[in-house]
Image 1 (cartoon, rainbow over the protein chains, first blue to last red):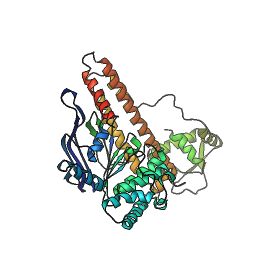
Image 2: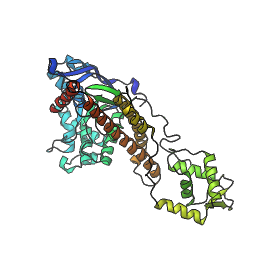
Image 3: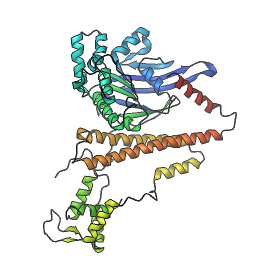
Image 4: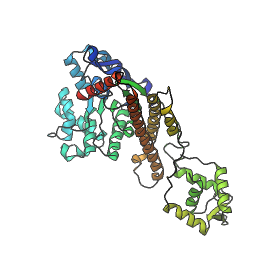
Length: 250
Length: 204
């Protein structure tokens, strides 16, 4: 994780602002937010409801455009693209994981994961091969031919993570991905997300659960659309003297 | 933390010297609460004075000159510890709680800023505990071995989580109290915030 500081920037928001309405009725849903997410980095976004978390995620994913400021994805400014170009970039570069209803019920796990690749224009057999690799990487390779309703909630979220990062996709936007899971399953899903990001991706995670945000490299806090604070992206200090993953000498 | 009870508990298993006692204590608690050897030594002396331990003269000191064993009353005291709950009647003095209690009533203190600074710090600690957990083989679910250390880490995670929840609660209540204190007509900024929150929600 120490190399993150020099890793390529995947997502960049510069003075990103989203105002709804005009004049005295104008509401600033997001106000001059600066945020950089690099390869290998997982950033958590926390804040009370209505603080702008969803707006931030929508701007980052190109689902919405800022009224001022810029959003850049792998160096490309989303505002330079028309709606069609944005849609193409969104589809090819970004994966999404939501709280639930991530998977298409009529498709198997492998088909769900290979679908984005087929839409990319990749041949069926190659898409399926890539999907199986992606499922292996999140530890559910053996469930490739199951349908979503034959999978547990945690397994479904793993499949969703595999799909989000299949092929050339390097940015995963996760909105309360552990919201419907118990704490042990949620932790297992976070472990998978963390590992996939470490293996070469970037992630933006919206959550209201501190224990899941703790898997991120840093947490940014939003309040009334303003980014009020951020935990420093430092290395953990030796807060437990002489600990770390403990190795007993005897 | 009761060093005395912990040492008695460790001696249930076998007689040990002061160095072995310190090593075992720290190994099992993940080094979270380091003990210095003088502390172990004085505690053992007191236990010996009170008749709860005695010197074991088997001469099998693993690096320790003298080993100590439980006496009968010592064994009873050690067993009794497992069976009695840790008293929670009088909360320990906590700097954060005292600080926020004083901040709420203090003029010119921005309680939201105080809370936010703490939130970042607590979140950072929670992340660091989580990184230690992430480093555990098999997600810390492997039985035996490091279970004790893993459970100590879990405790820190739960405590940090509870502190985050409490900080949210402090902020919400302090904000409400502040809003109630604003005279009618000057509440437009607070109302604007509520509008913005409602607008953000309705877009979802």
